[in-house]
Length: 256
Image (cartoon, rainbow, N blue to C red; front, side):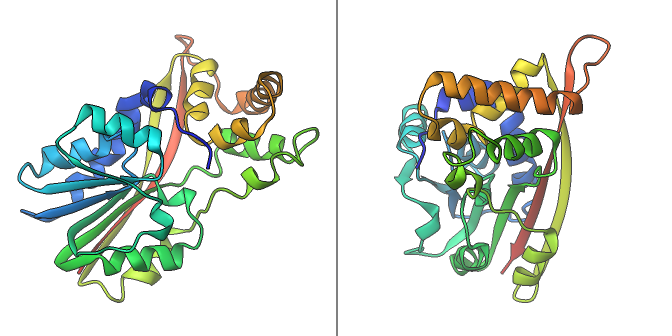
């Protein structure tokens, strides 16, 4: 597992946290007592949950020791678990099982989502946001460069790291057993100062495992330059020299 850099990730804290806020706002639960945040990262999404439901017991779970360390530093009184969500099996039921921008890193979503659903208490909810930006110029450029020489062999494993499914896939899994099911998508238009900022964003998330799979800084710089060169045309500069970075996300909430 490639390492995460909480400081790099949080350079765009507002943009990364807004979907977590939007997801929590749509959950129609008045007073959930127990909440678990699956893939809590550095704790920004768990902070959203604490603000939304101040009396709830919020547990944050993430596979990254670096992210959990940052979360513990910022909220030492909260319960944090360093564990891979891919193998998560709940020891108790939760009123809200919540996951913001995590499932795309984990394979076999059918088993994973059903295990998360099994952790939901009667009257509770499973609330999930997953990126749906796989057709963006930036992601397409990343995959194209990773499949080309001289990177193809080194990045074979990294190319298979993402898992994406349609809204219909999750609907078919969860709508039948749910008493109520909601799903929607939002395209966020992030304002970036430059194309370099665009790369900083991706360096902290989707491009991270690709860069860490390369052997040295020279290869990483070559890879980044090739990705940016291929993606640049998809993000034209605005009149003020900035650029718009569209990022689509898929949401769903299932109520037990």
